[in-house]
Image 1: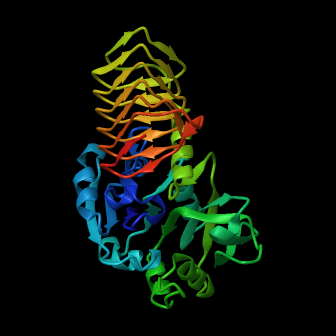
Image 2: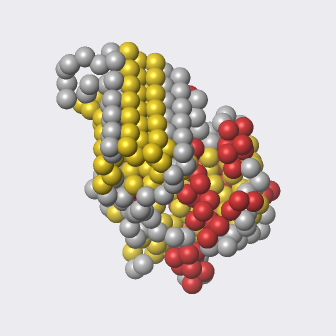
Amino acid sequence: MKALILSGGTGTRLRPLTYTNAKQLIPVANKPILYYIIEKISKVGIEDVGIIVGDTHQEIKIAVGNGNRWGIRTTFIHQPFPLGLAHAVKTASSFIGDSDFIMILGDNLFQMELDEIINNFYLNNSNASLLLHRVDNPSEFGVAVVENGRIVKLVEKPEDFISDLIVTGVYVFDKSIFNAISHINPSPRGELEITDAIQKLLEMGGKVSYTLTSGWWKDTGKICDVLEANRLILDSPDGIAGSSCVLGTLFNNRIHMGQNVTVENSVIQGPAVIGDDAVITGSCIGPYTSVGKRVEIINSHIENSIVLDNTKVENIGKKISGSLIGKNVTIKNSKSGQDSLSFLLGDDSKIAM
């Protein structure tokens, strides 16, 4: 079996941050989203991994490299234009060949491992197997109708309620999916939809099984989902690691600290993670905050936020909460006003208040 990760797309819902960052490399608990996916693929023993890339291909290639650190071999497949998930699969046909493959969207994060859906695919002699998730707002997603333990119909963003089971970004296919794709037309938005391809596979007599998610699943296309994924992941680790200076500082709950972190006269409320060479002085951090490498936080209060590398936050008199702050950002000087501030800041921003 091979793996295909879709890491193209423009991340429009996370702009301006994604003008200068691939959305799949946004760090959650100080680790790029894409790395979590690769780790799960490696854990089930898959070695050949194709990565669909677009405009951010150089950044993805630098971040992933040849895959040696995970024990995999990477092949980068360029999709010139984002013409749909099924188009991405079609673009990868020469890499996939006749192999079965698991496909994962590069901005999905989920708790469960991949062995369950792969085993389901083979135990049911399926042509496709999908990971489904139960939600309250199915009209925003591709939706699956299930009868007698099998998927019988797929509809992309249905206007009327037909099921509360949505299609996540995890799929397992055999080579018959390529024939199904060759028989579909672009949707009204001009894309080859993977839901249309799977529906065509059903109409051609294919067998489509499914696995329900166990634990949490998040599509990290929006800032609220990125921050929730950050909270969920930070809730799992425990302990304090790394060397640091802790003059007059109170540590509470689960905190992960990198190397050469300096913390003075501050309160660190976990769960939280502090990256290498960060400096925190006279501040309150957390809970549910990820602080990147070489970040400086001085006389400020930040919680439920992600702060990327090389950013400086200084003398902010109001609490910063629910924020995703890019690299090389400077925020300083505050006057009295509201009790908290929220930001979605792209790289190299500067804010003075």
